[in-house]
Image (tube, rainbow, N blue to C red):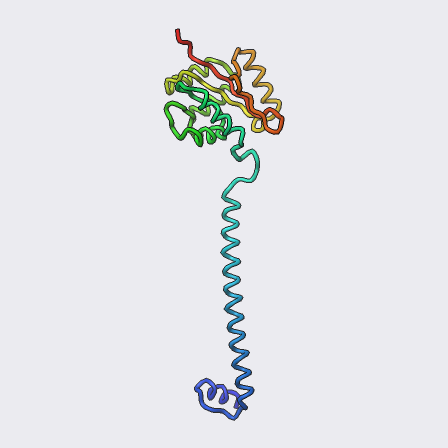
Length: 200
């Protein structure tokens, strides 16, 4: 009997049920369909926005040492502004990123080693272990530079290593570039050593 009523309802034939019950059933049915579609749209919207948020969050570093700092950019701008001759910079990969932001990639006048360049990495490791003019002179041959810079950063090396490199560089008669000490919030964060070819 119930099946017979459903079949009559679906076929559009009149049934013995009162019209009030039928209209109530149809209004409840339409409300539930509307609520379901609204809930489906909301779930899709939440899923998409969560996916976009997660992609952006995981796509960019959030730990300080993995980001280029303002003083790195300032140092790269300072070197480029104060050096008219061709130069080469021996530094870590984060300073390379800052330098490439300022002067471009593979700029022959203002040369920063690409962060994946093994030669540049070897020069940096050599300078880090024993900062000397000989390594800088060797690096200058790559782009026939007149000036070579060696940049170290306290947050990336640690205070002890940073101070050790400064002491050793001074013992080896490497000069700090005039204006080549950069501070952030009152603390020294970056130092630039340099060597210039003699004009003799």
